[in-house]
Amino acid sequence: MTSFRKASLIAAVAALPMAAAYRFALVYRGRAGYPRRVEADVDPGAVGLAFEATVVRSAGVDLPAWFMPAGRGRRGPGVVLVHGWESAHHRTLPIAQFLQAAGFHTLAFDVRGHGANPPEQAPITGGEFGADAAAAIRALVDRPEVDRVGVVGHSMGGVGALIAAAAEPAVGAVVSISAPADPYRLTRLTFRLAELPIPDPIAYPLAWLTARVYAKPRGHRIEDISASRAIARIAAPILLVHGAVDTVIPPDHLKRLAGHAPVGTKTYLVEGGGHSWLYEDAGFRRTVAAFLAASLGGRLTPEQAAERAAAVDARRMVEAVDRRDFSAVEEAPRPSLLAAEIAGLRRRVARR
Image (cartoon, rainbow, N blue to C red; front, side, top):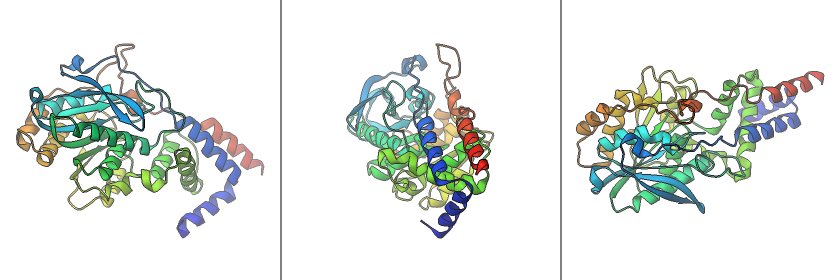
């Protein structure tokens, strides 16, 4: 622990007793660590994509997946698609649409604890996103249609893509979209998103403690589930993408990731883009397709892949059950997740 962190933690303890801070961290873990699951009521056929229903085997669990071939199944590059928090593999279909047009096979799957998978007994972290993405990469490598593999992830899926790319030498390209830089800053960010009135002198060390309590049941070290740490170990070409007006994960997370990234890492800021649905921007589609074509090869040149991807009308989809936009949860996190708990902690501290 650095001297600064020690001093910060001591200052926090003076304002908020350690027992209360630890209780807060436990409540946070119990309420924030288990995603709401949404199951698909559509499949790739709903957007005109041929597909094969399959599974990705990860840590002894079969994760539901779709393999969507491009170019009539001719051998070529493939891309793993990793969805975000409280999302599922059907929400990556718009990305699969424009990548297929650009000549890439795609594999989309449900991260454990998400989609059609059963609930997990321990909280989900970036480590689980990374492990499942790595398993999907290995599954795609084994397919006879695929000669090179890339990975594209959004938000927590972007963290998973970076962690997996750092661990899997088969990865030839990685695109991380709207990803948080590290667990500590993500935890601090969730306090703000939940509108918790915690002053910075308390919030920063409290986030430091909370992130470690959160990861403890899985046995993770914070350093091992940090996107900033993972990106420094990646040998493959990297593209970091962010929305310029992202209010969920602000663009300064992109800057921090880029600061840890290897020389040559590319960045792209989508003007007017928020946290989700960046694929609706033609510039985004063009940039991602050109990057993957340049990194993975294929039948199309980067320019051809870019133009074909840009021409696809990739749009967010609507869930048939209630006609709500099924990506909305990624754009609008649950309000005041821990407000009642923090109010109680503040009352207890005030009485001391």
